[in-house]
Length: 130
Image (cartoon, rainbow, N blue to C red; front, side, top):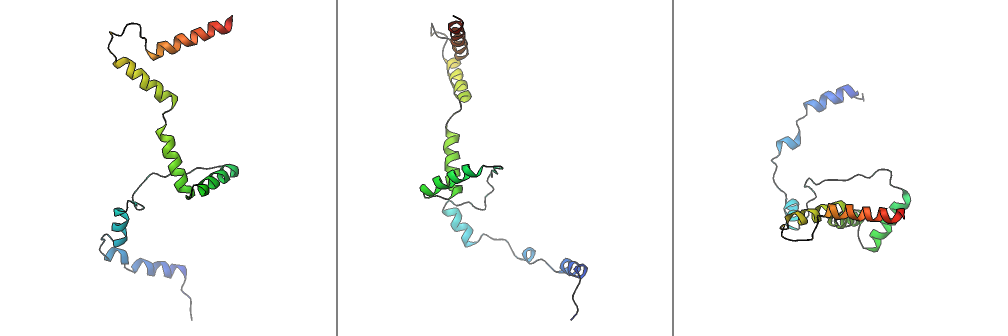
């Protein structure tokens, strides 16, 4: 029996009709069930790839995920979700600054956050120079 070369196989595959293009695309029972359950595996969601993760860090995360009864992915998603809910110091300063500028000017004796921080830094600088 003679073997077909790769050129012949490529040529044959070009002339073979695609099965997927002939079939109508309709939602399957599984996808409808997944959507109803709130599972969106087929949805396009952002992914994060972390390179050069030290093995010690990975081991700690795996242990914590196991202790929580979660997969590593579930644990990391929950941890990153909690982390995203905590404002950074810069976000807090911006929020406080926005609140102070919204206040009416009738509040005598009040200064903006930027000015208060500058005054505090000046005070600390004077104290350190003594």
